[in-house]
Length: 347
Image 1 (cartoon, one colour):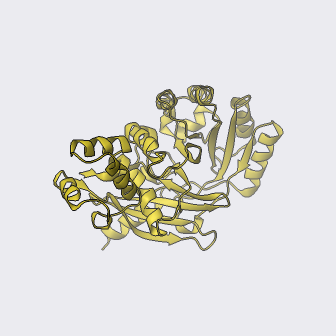
Image 2 (cartoon, rainbow, N blue to C red):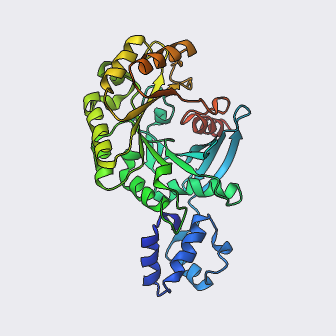
Image 3 (tube, helix red, strand yellow):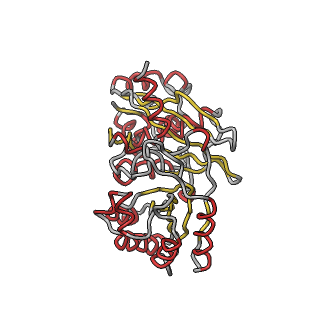
């Protein structure tokens, strides 16, 4: 299946040139694509061109919203999307003072199988294409009347972005194009569990999103028990890759640290974490774990989280406790998709 939203502006321009279209047609069509317009809504595009695109097998829509859930606590919106092949993915629109951040998925499922995450319970189903990734942003903007509803993007939904490197890289190119969504590179974050070779490749290829690394433990002993990726990429290599990313891009790295009761929330863990990040240009987000019932893990208590933060602060480490959003609407990655699939199976 081919989708218009899979095309970068450069690719679309070449395609239309091959069709014998004038150069300005690419900007017209790309604008419509970036608004999520269907063929019948592209009022200034010739019917002959639309017919040619359909003849060549290009669909006008790779994704649609099938349900939304709004938190009564903080207004966070959980979205469930349907893909062309019957698969479903999810996302979260989080509201902040500086704008709205959309958490997008890069894969259906995930092969990383972190012990606290629902996304990996079914394994990796397939990668998403660039159009399916960017389509999540487009349909949310369209939901709000094609205003710029999404101002910031986080590649932190279902899946490991760097495990789908080529489509993720293409997405990073397309999303910042001033002919389309034109979202600033400074407003894009990419979260990875730590594929060190791909972290280095990302900056070597010229991409500079805010890099967010899911660390979640200060030692290989603990990390390998909750994150299988640690068997391949030990923490020493991960820290080295993070430092390399900063040296090449000048962008401070963010470490995510989900605090799990009696797993990684001890004072000793805090001291170890301060030690391994000493001297780095980084920030640590302490996260109260959203409980996933299938995983059997609980978040650390507020008292432990605050005590952990105090140790880091006393050691001169930049750290904060991240505000938990969407806890009443299954805000953790993969939870909504699994519930939906369970309901469909039981019909």
